[in-house]
Length: 361
Image (cartoon, rainbow, N blue to C red; front, side):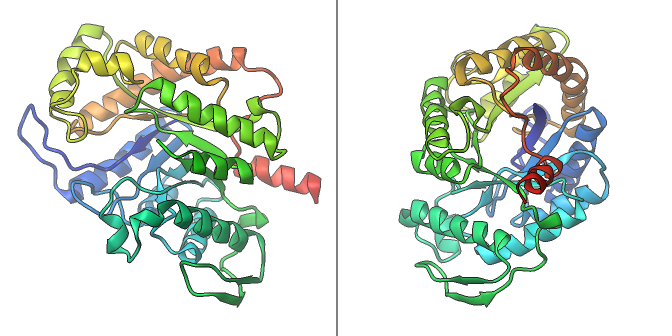
C-alpha cells in the first residue's frame, strides 16, 4: 500500500502571526515538503492544478514535478488533480509522457473535472459540459498514449488525422491514471470502464457519501471484467495534524482550522473531526482513525494526507512529516498489510505495469 501527501498549494495567512508567505516562498516550500516526504519514507507526493488565487499550485504541475523529479530518487510523483476538462488532451499526453521519462517512470496522474467554476470560461469551456468534456477528453488521452497513429473526431476540439503524440510513453507503458471525484458517479463509471483507479478525496464530506461512490466504482469495475470488486484500485484522501500529545495538537491547530479559507468559520473543529477523516491528536489517534477507513471502504491501495494548508508554517509542516513518516505510516503499513487478502493488488507502478504488459505481449 502507498502512503503519501498531497498539496493544494494555498497561499494563506498564518492566523497566529499574521504573516502571509509570498508565492515564491510557497512554491519553494512545496519543493522542500516533497523532498522531506521522500526523506521520511513516504511513497507519493501529489500536487493540484489551480489557476486562481489564493493558490500558488502550478497551472501546469509538470513544471513543479519535473523540478522535484530531478532532486528525488524513489518517491512517486502525482497530480491531485489534472483538469481533464479544460486542458487539451494532446498537450496532456505530450507533457506527462515527457515528465514520465524525466522521472524514470515515477509518475502517475489523477484526473478531475475541477471544483472552481470560473476556470471553465477562462479556457473557453462551459461548466455545464463538465461531464461530457471529462469523458471525451480522457477517451482521447487514453488513445493517444496507446496508439502510434491516431485518427480522431469529437465535439470539443479539432479533429486529428494521422497524429502521433511525442514523446511516446516510457517503455510503451502509459502513466497509471486515477480519476478523482467528490460527487460524480459518472467519473466513477469512467474509472471502472478503463480499469483505472478511483480516488475519493473524502476530506470534506461525510463517510457515507463516499461509501456509495466507491461501492458503485467497485461494482462497475467488476462488471467491465477487470477483476473482482474488492480488487478495484481505490485511493483515499485524509487530513491530520499530529503532536506527541493530543491536547497540544488540538490547541495548536485550532486557530488554523477556525480561519482556514475552505472550512473556517463553519463547523467546529470537534464536529468536523467527528464527521470527516480529519484527525487532530497523537500519532496513535491518527493510526486508529486511519485504520477505520478500511472498515468503511474495504482494502485499498493509496492513502494521501493533506498536511500543508491553512497557513501552517513550513517548520510545522516538516515536523508533521517527521511524525507521519516515523511513527504513523510504519504502523499503518504493518496493520493494513496483515489484514489485506492475498488476491487484493498493490497500487500499480511503472514497474508492475511494465511486467504485466510483458506477460500479455
